[in-house]
Length: 317
Image 1 (spheres, helix red, strand yellow):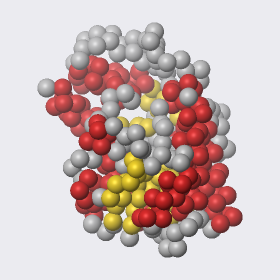
Image 2 (cartoon, one colour):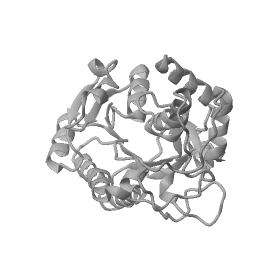
Image 3 (cartoon, one colour):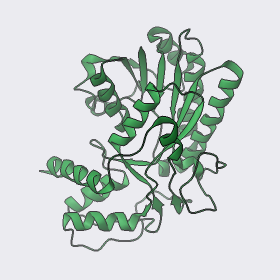
């Protein structure tokens, strides 16, 4: 069976490709932006000779259609996207062109594949946005996205359901929580705190009281593998731990592990991009995934932080 992974040079995409190659059951292709720089390609340098690589931009309908027509995947794991939430407030049109229009282009290209099995879409817990209840969100809650990024993902979900009803496209939607364990990007919260403390820099926490659900990359990759191998279609699943903690609590846990002596600064630095909205609570309930798919997170926050800290210590040597 053939699997096309979009965003294969990214954090989750590259790890997922390695996992599927080890399984040996699939022929893997990866979709890269035409403007992908060498640093991004280096993220898959160890596997690039074992996969097929295609270059196309999501908003180029003809290029996307040509990739799908050439490779003819049975499955699409659509993970590629513009994902930096704070940047989406500054570039809402670019985020929607990439995320929403790009997904539409992939959907309609997939509809032309005769033996197409499943379109697996990487949504996000961000689509829940602002909710009244401060308890882990379940899949049946109405969506209330709080950023252009989250709105673009919610729009994709609606389009997928329409494509299923109108054209019979089989799909699965993954709403995952914040994931950590990055090896090539220190710009996200867990990696940012770790690398800043290792470098003895000041640590700013712009939303110290914000509660987030954090999941290790291995559990996230396992979620996609589970979706791919399951017989389930046309469903939406949360993937997370349900164990929310504040960002200040997270910073203090890492501070203790690293022996960081400076005070954590509970505000954004002056140079930080303005973000008009930030949800106070985002955490998700994954009971549906456990009941239907048999999936549940296996790596505790403590264990995950130990491995992530060890990796960045090695990098910083």
